[in-house]
Image (cartoon, rainbow over all chains, first blue to last red; front, side, top):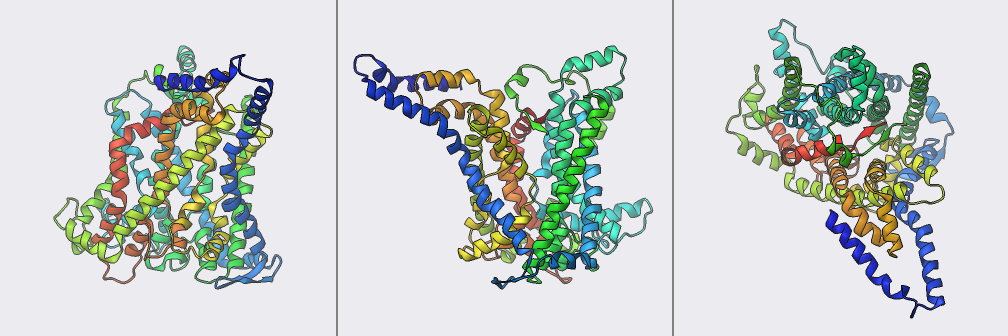
Length: 334
Length: 292
């Protein structure tokens, strides 16, 4: 790295030595140069951030607004140019649909039972991974390995493991005397099964994010705490947790967004029934409901209304989380 | 606002806080259980893929590998075009990660080290875009793709993923700490224009962070399911779309071992990368991730 920087300095200086000599650099030429230099200073930052904002405008913002516009119309997937103005009808119709409320409730419950244990376990694992020990590198990679697995592959494996008749989980449970559980047909078991897939894939990733944050906590804080007679547990709750609170908030927000969009796991877990999320929609999420309305049922306007409802819910949840975070901060006097 | 901070150079010189504590037996046991729970589903995928379908659908299920792997691979290949799918996923994930790394480094450098009007507001906007669920854009995007007659073509998967707010933010945090302002000023004094500075000063320093970001984006893009599932068909699938066809059938004659073989084939490339580069990826994440 050092050599390339040195090379850079040499490269950079070479072309400028000639014009800078007083003999051949006329005043016009240097004026032109300094104008170019100022233009480079002023304009180039915008050139470097432009690709991001152009792509975001084209593939993020514009479709987002268009979705909002669509949600006020009746639109058929097969004939999307014909748009009938419906106003807020699509939204009021959602409130009268039981399936929407089921999907909303499922998204919430699956989100809670996947996110809360996932982040708590990640926090604990990160704390343990921070100790000095043999095989630490292997353990870290092993715990991150599920992150490399796709939704599709992971779900297919867990479909097998949760199979009520020959799956390994029921077989293990039967050995400790628990009767056969139908992990597909019953509401809570099916939601727990879907949450297990999410938790399995993301716990290790979150643990590493926490571990990174823990390694940045100043050592003197721990030394001071242990001088004051704090036990390891007290150091964890009084030093580690407050120090990495911004990171915890960050992972909560990211996991909330992920949970709101849950699609692949419940869809593939449903196997043949797919987007309906179980025979009685017992594990259909808002994303699945949106897809069912927009594609199989071809009603793009109503599907857009579901999409915008998701955005509104996220904004609401985000605002609540921010409020709680702010209140905690004032309470702790930080 | 949570901030991602990257201080890898500094941290490598100084052992992290808490590092001095030695692990007790309980730590080993808990982490051992966590490692087994993490790895067992992957191991069992291989077990199921190497057994016969009948054997997999028995209770108790098989726990050790058998000899049917090749037969199952042939069958899986017949149900979905796994070869095409692997090639397509490689192309898509490769293009997406190259472009994301390039644009994120440029934008991250501008946000970290260059002065311009509206910088803070624009950076806040970048962070805010991270919270928008991609599902919200799917319906209009689908129309754009159909209008362009790009249905079932790879560019319809690649184009919407060319940039990522997370990448911009990640590179910005890294360069804020790792790139000394003096280096840029020295190059400026020597008359280097900003593209030259990027090529000779920024890129060499940013390389480790670019590698980690590239890996993360590659994994994410390889595993992406929703949007490819919407725009691609089984004639031109990515791995994840092909897997949904192998697993998505109905009826009782589904061969469970073949489904597991598909899952194995789709995951193996990434697992191999992880087995080889795992330590560097983990090191990269823990060296440059989220802190206050």
